[in-house]
Amino acid sequence: MRTIGLLVSALVAGSFLAACGGEDIKDGKPLDKGMPGQVSAATGGTGGGGNGGTGGDVSTPDDPPDYLADYPEGPYGNELHSIMPNYRFMGWNNPKEVEYDTEKLEPIQLADFYDPDGTKNIKIILINSSAQWCPPCKAEYSHFKTNGTFAEYREKGVMFLGSLMENNAYDPPRYIDGQAWVKSFQVEFPFVIDTSFKLGGLFSIDAIPNNTLIDAQTMEIIQLLPGGDTEGLLSAIDKQLEKK
View 1: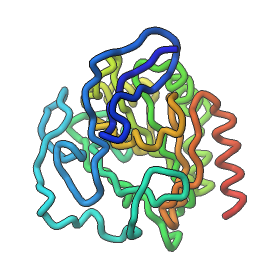
View 2: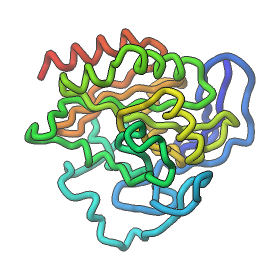
View 3: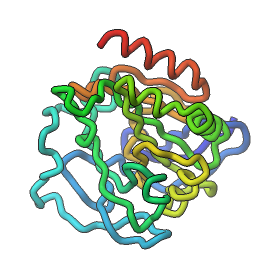
């Protein structure tokens, strides 16, 4: 098994994520999951970095957290049945529509998909976390691309949110890494570049890709699923939709 060293916090320091076959990756960089209510370099602050950068700090925790408006109150967590933190990233709402342009990256937060009254037609949010080097991740996105999966499930009330957590060098992804990924798979759903591995706490097992289902009405984490079984993932989404 190939193992990737991703220190996500003091709680899981030194842990590794097992994935697709190979060797151990050592000396991984410590990556902060971030906290809701803060916008900084560690929590996904906007700006900086240029086409190849990973973003910079343009705010401080003392700035008014306007992006937390209209979001369920905590306590927040990454475990099953917890309220998902309102993480903030840089990304594209529709990468294909803006021709995968890194100059058109914009802030994206979980609150964008919160839909307590159904006006956004979002019942379930699928959060997918992938790595650029991971074959099962590529297979999952190839399935989405070939079968028009997002368009089909968007009509059913499902919103996809893709994220890239590591590049081909097993390092935190740069903007250009995210650009290469979304362009390769012609991604049309919201996609973010998780430079500080904020979504790492959602990994229920040490494998990627990782898929998380969120109830858009409450932002409760309702299912944690390993990737690599796309048909199983879609079946799980269908079963959750039956409960709506």
